[in-house]
Amino acid sequence: MLKKAKSGVSATAELTCLLRAKSYGEKRPQLKCDDYVAVILSQTFHSFFSMIQKTFLLGDDVVNLATPVGIYPYIVARTLYIDQIVQKTAGRFSKIFILGAGYDSRAIRFHHSLQHSRIFEIDHPTMQQNKIEKLAKAHITPPSNLTFIPLDFNQQNLADTLAALPLQPGEKCLFLLEGLLMYLTHPQVKSLFSAISDYSSDGSQIIFDFVYDHLLVSDHKFVATSAMTDEYGVKESVEGVRSLGEEWTFGIAEKGLDAFLQQYGLTLLDRADARELEKRFFTDNQGKCLEKINTASCLVYATREIS
Image (cartoon, rainbow, N blue to C red; front, side):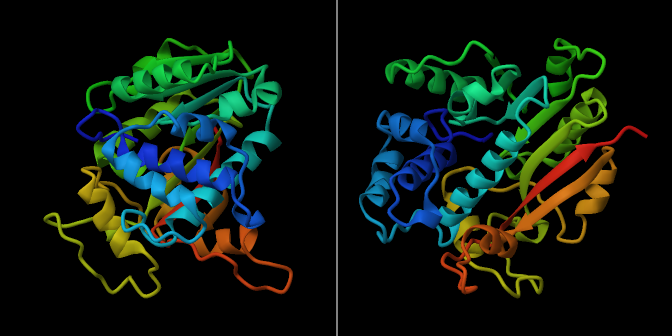
């Protein structure tokens, strides 16, 4: 999460944490994730925005105007998707970088399986300090292999940070960019991926999500386009993040992902849009879709190949 609410803390980061907390207590098995840390952290949220959002945690079907349709199942599916890859590849990477970490808890939840990796959470200084204070307030001690690195993407370059963390021969890295790219500018994304590409060794991997570029606002207004033939919850999402002061500023064309990855020596391993996530996580044995996902975003899993 990049842009911040007036308090300096990302409202979308708070919302993501709150929805993960709701998911932990779910009675509907398809919507359940195991982010117990989100439950604990959410109890320390006292902003006006978060207090309103907490009403969403009181029931399974509470209508919340600040939560666009399909976002809750998307957050759950995204969490499950990334959790599965992190657990499956545990032990493969010497360094794991979580960029725009927000209230990410994987270093804590998967500490046992990730104990031989060095984990670096990189986020805006104000946001990161807020998280550190909330962990302390909740009596949660970060694992010894987790390092917090404050970085303002508006003013600092990731390449400088990575240069201070040289790789040894054969070391591979995993980069997690969850809910980040859409809040960056084109030059910032280019700088970010160039730094990751230059730093990474063959076999390093990256997971990120993005929004489609035709959904970006124009003159602060949502603009419907001919590409919007099967959009679910998109208009509400665009207007929702803008109302929080965190509007989307970067997107990738629906058919432009391969070209985007090739610029940085990345090869696609998996791509999961809303429909694919529905199939994997929310479709029962009879083929019925149990949850419909907001169609604004797409998840990407790629590997670095040195030519």
